View (tube, rainbow, N blue to C red):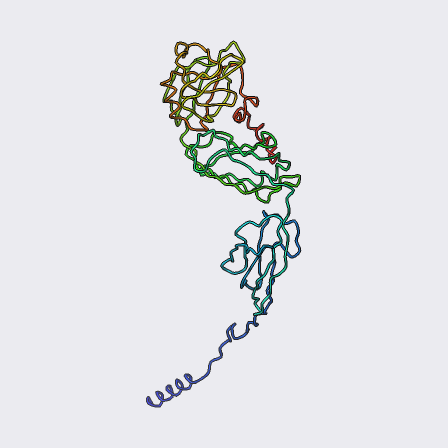
Length: 387
């Protein structure tokens, strides 16, 4: 009995283990992905075939969809090939050098499509012929160190008609945040300054992509320019014509106070102008001449030019008696020679010289660098983009 039951159980178990269970097919088994559709390569050349008056400043590229580039060549009418770089995914090629003015360029090469077939590159285009070219010079030397009030100045070789186009070709990058703007001082001179002084210890990079840029009237830029310079420590000279002193403020702290004599108050032609001047240049000795006031080649030591109207900070022993109490100069800031030498050794081009207390104000008639005499809103109005 027991054995029979056991046999029956075993039989049931054996029967159960050999049965085929019903299982639901997987999604993969239910659906089979269709084969990918092969496509020919779609090639876009920029500039395209027969394009005329192409600016060298415009993009030069080949772009491929549904395939990849195998080779690209762009050659000018003198047989010179333009350098370029294929992207790692082989979907594009970009020129790595500028094109020339008034040349014909011819495309060649090929791309391989997803369908395994090659598509040839071809065609040609012509770059514009400028009526004339305009060059520029910049005031700051590469790797120079300047003071916190130094403007960036571009002087152009001819008047500029399309000022907005030129401004759009310019960028100023700084290692420390600052707000600044370009301003046209006249048709050939463009200045850039910050709303406040540059932050101390800032690296500044100026890029002028002028080549291929329209200057208006058929003129185009002669070449690109770039320069990087450093703004040093903050050093400010502060002079008050009524207290007859010149203070030196470095990084926010007063480090010196020198007795000074400024321009004679009773003669508007001799007054030291109020306003923010900047250090422009310096000479160990300088010969002063002013026919209006009947002196010629008066040599002074440690001369620091602070404007183009004849104003300097310099040493002058004959006026030591007046320094600290009376204004007797012809517009310059007179210091004792020993004090002037210290100032001479410390200042950098672009250091601000802030003068207050006089009856006359620094302005356009005083030469190139009156930038800080212009209010910020007025400065913005001098920009072709912001004005």
